[in-house]
Image (spheres, rainbow over the protein chains, first blue to last red):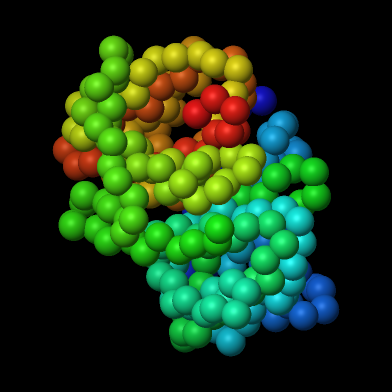
Length: 124
Length: 124
């Protein structure tokens, strides 16, 4: 089913109408909230668009898995570790992380770091 | 190969380092430039992230095809037609267009309309 989720920010806290934020309470993750913008609820058949908001000093899990990521930074400043390399990122930088690469997103600023991250459907 | 394409805007003209813009000279398309942010060059295995910039009064082709689109508006104001419905869109609205739905993006403003649009790899 086609759908538009209207953006509905409260300053730096990003929300979308019809999308329920999910705080990630997982080992190795610090102050990250996930919003599934286009996924199972919308009937996405092949890949899932998620928005992640990482609070100051927060980070995603340092992890490695077979699925690739395609990400685009929307707000804030941070860094992404890919393998042994760490790269500073800021809005609208495009990040491709190949499958099986070790990776982590980290907020290095005093404001939220927000990015969308698309992943294949099979294991999201 | 993992990669970060740094964003490099010249005001409302969006560019990314290492990404060559491609003006779309196709029937039914008016003043649209495509930037493949994550695709074949980057080794994307399953889906392709493109940025489209539509100039004032421009539009994508009104078309229908089996592949779905997952889009996120980055700049400007416009509207998206999905089937018989037309919905106003602005930055960070998330748009899912199911496969085989008739659709078109149109710029209704005086500034560029820019959005990313992800499509499965097989036919991009």
